[in-house]
Image (cartoon, rainbow over all chains, first blue to last red; front, side, top):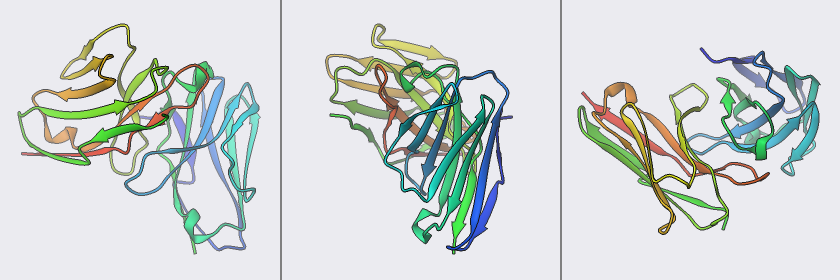
Length: 115
Length: 111
């Protein structure tokens, strides 16, 4: 069983909706990540938090808004998304930022469909 | 420079056979080379990783072979099982740079 928990597992939203994806880890990791994965493609980095501070934003559109309330939680707020934003959104954590490398522990993902 | 080229895109192997997936990189600064395994509907999970100071690392049926001069590394799965059917991603990184993933290989092991 994964130690990174993501909710919801599935989300369907309209282009005018506001929704949030949630991620939680209890491994004491200090770095947390959001990735986007399209079908048959590798994960694509969106955001990195280190010690609850945003350290990397991969030029993601502002309709995606990350939030790290504490060292165990990571949220991704969604607003005014487009159909092309439909994808699997993966949360991951690692012990330290460690050069954004080292072992990443991924959650099972939230499957997002934008209508 | 930042790319990791992975081949083949898909691979079909018979049960008990050897599965081999290859990756090549250009950036000689890369110093960490992990392989991730992803089952349908799941997130990727670290399978095995290597650093360039060794040429081979083995964990059970899984072996990474690393050729620094050729800038290539490969994953060998011995005695492949139907349960190994998944998508495999090689990756590379260095320093504070992000993990660069290969495009993935879908492995199917027939019973």
